[in-house]
Length: 308
Length: 296
Image (cartoon, rainbow over all chains, first blue to last red; front, side):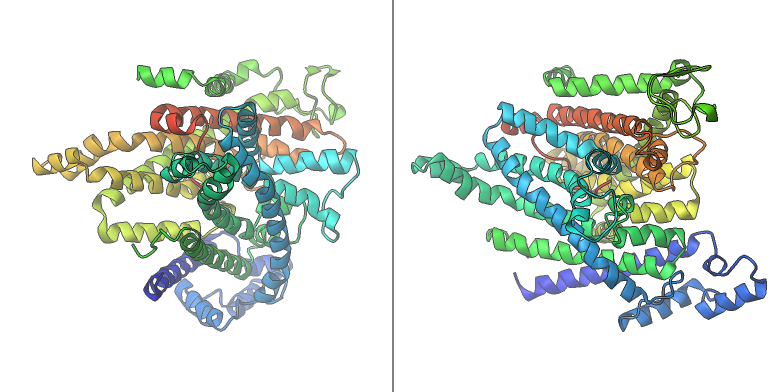
């Protein structure tokens, strides 16, 4: 890995960031509904609306608004939320840890279960265990997140009363949303882990290891596992980005005060600066995680020369 | 084709998948005949009644909702919209993605680089954030929901088709066609397309299930099709408020969504293995996950 590789990737990342910010800026301005009207009471006169529009800079051309926005953003100023009157940066900082807590918990649950599950299913191909795992993981991938969440609420909160239905505060509030969020990733990771385990078994180094007389468990854990886990790292990385970018459905369902919840509210209230900030944050997460995944690839498997 | 069918039929789960898919399509087509009652008729005296409730209108096998409408009838009519939206969005997004991926992979160079950066830009948006924003711009109706789902999904096909095209375009038969002076359009459509269509079909199959769930997610968040049209996602959204008193409103449409998605995924799995025999020989049934994509 050379400096040139990092430089090129960083440059590409910056282009992607700039593009994403322009696209979102333009799309957001196309949403019908005037934030100034939404902010003022219904009795407001057209003059008052106009005054608010010009004080918010909404009466200027889109590209001028974009220029102003970027100038401010470079110095870390994301603007002020139209509906809450709080700086956007502050809002993001408030909500990010909650989403991060949820996403990390969900990912840990998913990994702890899926990696051994996929590895074992792959190691015992076509066994009953393998078929059962296949069906369960396919089911996990097919179940709509919001329905799964509702069913968990119904069973564990409404009928059994072991956890709260929604909200935020104690560790008990974390259980249902994180399990809901984990299931899809769990299923996907287990399926991927299984197929990469099968792929790894077909390699020469496994034949060599067996020929050396190594025990089957050594072959599995030392040789197969290490190679099978590479694609899994990639997917976990990329998917973790999408979790952080806002578990919109899960957070809305459980009233979890994270970025996803904030996203839905901000879109409904035409709160441009907040949505813009969220897009920027998720774009940054996306490019940074992509970069990290590339780097990790090279660390886990030194044969991979990233420059080529 | 015969071989393909035989390989496909060898997998029981895939066959089960296609049987359920066909049944669902038939239900959707025959919905007005099959639905025991009108999905729109309200009867507030019969609201929130459990499965098996009998009133003047007849037996409500799956109960009634908060406006006294028959859940089973709404479920049957709802199948129409869910399947139509899913399939239409895949056709639209798939066509766009296929063409762009094909041209990008074949032409290469700066056009290809620009396209890849553009796909990255789009992938930098979380799927629902993008979908919600575009629905907010276009307004929530059936046509726009299809457009939104197509916009958010064309990248998946473009990426797969592009990489398949890259793998094919340097093969001898393509070079031969170029050498005898065949026009580029003809090479792309006659020589490359038939060789890259398998992975495309597989991705498209999985996308149908993904977009059916995505449509219901939009309805769930209140930005899907208008609430006057019965949809599984909309029913679930209604049911959320009555989860404690009337679980049946939410349980049944969610189950149908899961069944639709599961059967399409099983079908897709079987199709992929049938189209790629090497894959099944080496890796066994249901081997690899479909291309990584953002969660629905």
